[in-house]
Length: 302
Image 1: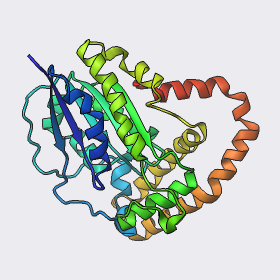
Image 2: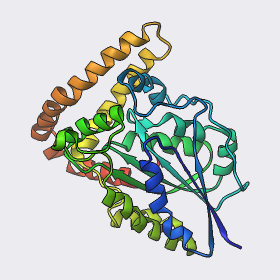
Image 3: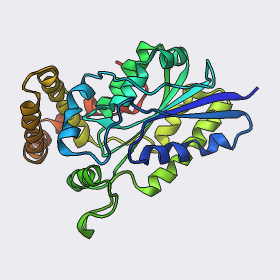
């Protein structure tokens, strides 16, 4: 009897669909595995390309993981032997369609006591989103056994420019002919098949409990200290902003204020904070930093 795998994902640009396609190629090649894919679609579609106001308008509900109505979920099976979740962070949190499916009763029923692998595609910050994913999975008694984080490997500030170019125009070419192409590189998207092969081997051998160390050894989860440091602090600040804005009568005004705050924080405050940390704190916190990196690379929960 074949093992049943469900791959659930949300995409606007098509990037996550490509990632899932390459990642699951090895699973499709196995006669022992039956693969089912399910693309999540909100009942009210989010625009792509975005406009700046519509993009920032999803911030509060992204951060608070407030679900929205989805188009009907159609599953072929009642139970699965493995569930794969492909997602992208919005404002350091799981995108709203993904947090919505994770809170959908029909999907939660299939998550219960089921091994889960998460795979994300983002600019470069995914730690906070993954921690929220862990909590949502735990609420369904799911068993997280693997995580893969695919990122834009270019310079932080170059990728900041290119991600907004892509989001606001829908174009994935080189802005002005000088900036790199936005998003996860084609090489890394195609390379997701390597991780898929590792998953296949562990899955067929009933060894998913040792999957994550094998993925880490393949560089499936790389963590840069500077990005981890900034994201941990930004996550707390985003939480404060979201609580202030959510349900406020001054929502539009507050979102504009948040937009400019974010720009100043990323381009002015972050470099200064990192410099201060590098001089006065980081040299004395080696063990703590190593423990943090090891934790975020793992599938453990606090």
